[in-house]
Amino acid sequence: MLVAPSLLAADFSDIKTEIAKIEAAGADLLHIDIMDGHFVPNLTVGPDFVKAVKKVTSLPLDLHLMVSNPENWIQPFYEAGATYITIHQEATPHSDRVIDKINELGIKSGISICPATPESNLEYLLGKVDLVLVMSVNPGFGGQKFIPEQIKKVEALEKIRKENRFAYKIEVDGGINDINAKKLITAGVDILVAGSFIFSENDYQKAVKSLRG
View (tube, rainbow, N blue to C red):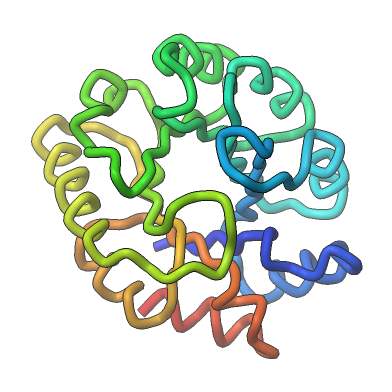
């Protein structure tokens, strides 16, 4: 089970130190939320920030694109150093084409769905993605409360994965803490994204360890 701290909750005034601390705490990936102020009501960072992060870490960069027309941003974020690029199924009518573009670049592709979107919407993509990101809050802001109904979605995706021998990892993001983490691990999650839970603690290593169960 992997832990991907979300840099959205880090101290941006000292981001290099924050990244060093989270590496030392045992993080497996760095999760970076890309928001455009259109698909979600918030605006965060772009390719230049990702490029700067890439220079100061050896951890894989897990980019979550909460943007309209994600097809316009695949190449810039690939060039910035992304390891994973995850797009939202709801953000484009051409999600299959965008996933193909990510795969052609030789990096890992991901598809994400909002809490109200059923996993059945992903039926024709699951055989070609490396990651399925289940949002357990409505995307756009950190610090929201976990929506427990999303555990059923993780269970369904785990069942589909086993039945079809698919290779995608299941990731969950939103309101993650040491309590719901245990339920999610049982349901079949592979990667837990946590922001506030980790970065609000003085001891990042303790927080990361507690998520692993």
